[in-house]
Image (cartoon, rainbow, N blue to C red; front, side, top):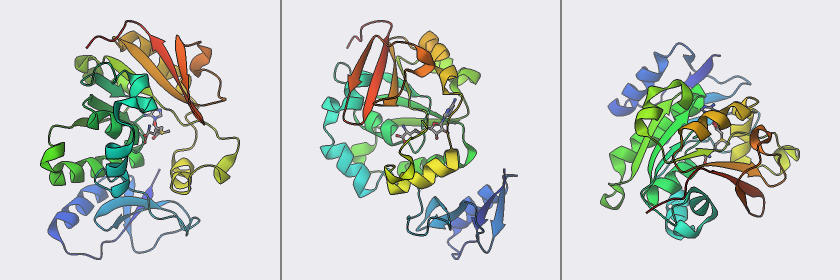
Length: 256
Ligand SMILES: C[S@@+](CC[C@H](N)C(=O)[O-])C[C@H]1O[C@@H](n2cnc3c(N)ncnc32)[C@H](O)[C@@H]1O
């Protein structure tokens, strides 16, 4: 895989350093112009992905300090929202949660802002760079209110990494890409670009068994409401929402 990174229009030294670091990666090449493939660019200081085939979609980046992320943090339902209940944060706010399919880090950010210690894994090299960029900007610019938020990122797959075992996760969260039958019409616009970039996680079933082996309390799998169970394995229980479902594979009750 090779992806283009648009040349910088700025001489800002911190941005120049980030640009130079990225162009050292063998699969990134600096370029003046995009072609008809997804490409990377610095959009208002954020590393972002864009695609000339999707001219109406804003470049996609990770911004934990955005209004949308703050709104979800402050008004998203706290520990009562579905993902928090599925993880068990309504019972214990400081759980160690391994998010094995971090994506753009949205769910991880919600969990961490509720008090969880979160370790994220992302294997897609472009998504990893977007997330890494968002996390670095967040750590450099966060307010005191967010100083204790615990969010770390590793590149790769959790069961190939010794970090995951050392972290001793109490809960493992899985949200692999699922082929959407309705296709792009129903996928939110910014997510359509992300879906095009990542595709389908056809090997997602392989995540469940090692996750169950490693998690102390439970494994939580997010699925579209009508989707079959991951790896065909019936969960202990499911929390069903409007369009998605959380399947819980319970090993032990969560203690506070
Ligand atoms: C649907 S997205 C996750 C969205 C995420 N929950 C969020 O809130 O932004 C799934 C992500 O998991 C990643 N992924 C899938 N299988 C993986 C694996 N075995 N190890 C690491 N990352 C994986 C994909 O590259 C993709 O970025």
